[in-house]
Length: 114
Length: 442
Image (tube, rainbow over all chains, first blue to last red; front, side, top):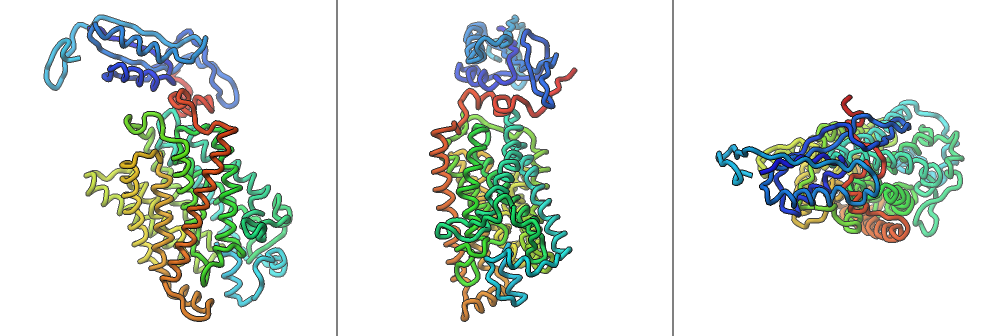
């Protein structure tokens, strides 16, 4: 079992979500986060271009069985790369081992619970 | 809204209403009471547009909140400018092109009304009051096509729609020489814009939805409102603003103003309460959004009727409108077309219900006036025929007009957002901003 944590651009959440759903991954957790990346983003605020030093991003957390790791990562990468040209800062994917997983309602453990 | 005729009849002056400027100069006394109320009404109707922006803005997804609010706000810019340039002339000038619309060169740039006074009210006030109706009508259509229309396409669309659909309709129904104004004994009854505003916007919204299609992933992914609190505040502002919309449409400050104001309050309350009850029985829960929708259903239905019905009629109209709108939205979900914020389901359907069923609640004095006007008898069924004629004309004209505008415009400007843009959201793609948390937490 692995825990996949992906940080993506805020405006690509729907693209990534739909791509994941198409790949058969529908159990995800999404959060709003902000942070520093390589991206230098400009926003217009009161007519002035500003570069916020903390950029809003989306954090996805997906627990998967080992055989699904590649599918999940591909789905995220395909969607998050689409049509963004040479712009840097499309995000990152972190994969960590997952020790245990418990479904609260039934008490199932391990791979079955994912 | 029957500015030119009723006061003239009452005061016994037999002046042909089309010579408004000449008429204005003859009675240049300003009625400060009426003027004060009309200034207030004008302000109240303008307040409905930020209200609508909040109502619609709260209902869309987070990524589209600003784009949707901008639909209402840009209408304030575009429609006001067009109204000054030629809109007022097209709507309230004398018949041209066989009565298709009006024209009066004095009204172009409002240049000839600088010191004009009509019925005790400076004509500037009347013109600005009417301008607000021209603003809110296309802004209502935006609800049908929210979350997927391009900003540029929307701007061109409402400009053309205002010129080609709204101004002629407004002329037909409210100008003294408009053919619907003079239909039957005492005209088709549209006190404050049931046909001109709500039916035309609702039907146009429906046609626009069918033209540009559903949002991506509709209906299999749920799309939830981003901020119902804002929607509730918006609905409240609409209710408040509606007093200007309806009571201001008496273009006076007197008995008819009070009558319109009273039935407006009653119908809104009846509509909202009915929605709660219907939804409570049907879904088991009474939603805040349902209450807000009921307010609108009631207000929309009373809009054409505010000048002629009494409190009992207002109760029935508000409740009936809600029931039919509720069914219309269920039907919409069955049919699967994506009228996103129910511009047709509430404004189109509610407007039609109001304009039809008002005939059963007309106060007797109005019917007596109508009978006198034809020099004999005038029955409810005859008036029903007049109403149906006006409704069918409004539906057909708005529907066909909208389709033609969209069809031609789409050849030059993309109206439908690309799939990519739709997923990124209107705020990001067309405005480069986001509604919430623009300043990140640091």
